[in-house]
Length: 134
Image 1 (cartoon, one colour):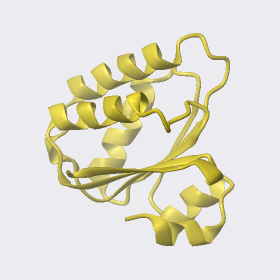
Image 2 (cartoon, rainbow, N blue to C red):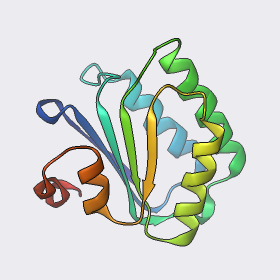
Image 3 (cartoon, rainbow, N blue to C red):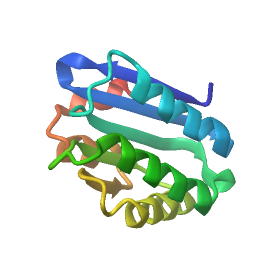
């Protein structure tokens, strides 16, 4: 599967690693499956790794749909987790920023980074966690 999730309860962290080209339908399915996973807690921070992703297949409509889905999942929560996206390539970075605009009413802190070390630091995690990203 081009999106692999790692749930790390001890770090209260979920790592979502995108590899290659991920069709829109599979993108949405992967995140819905995460939210349905009994091990997942909505308070866990997220690290989304797009370093090996080919984001050219991602459509703005899917990002809008995803933002609506996440908004529904978090409901009326006052404050959710931190979400750090590692997107060194211009297209991935731009699409992540577009998603950020679509999800402005989702109760979480969302930040896009070009560098994994900076993302991990912002999440308040030890730098060595970068080695755990697959």
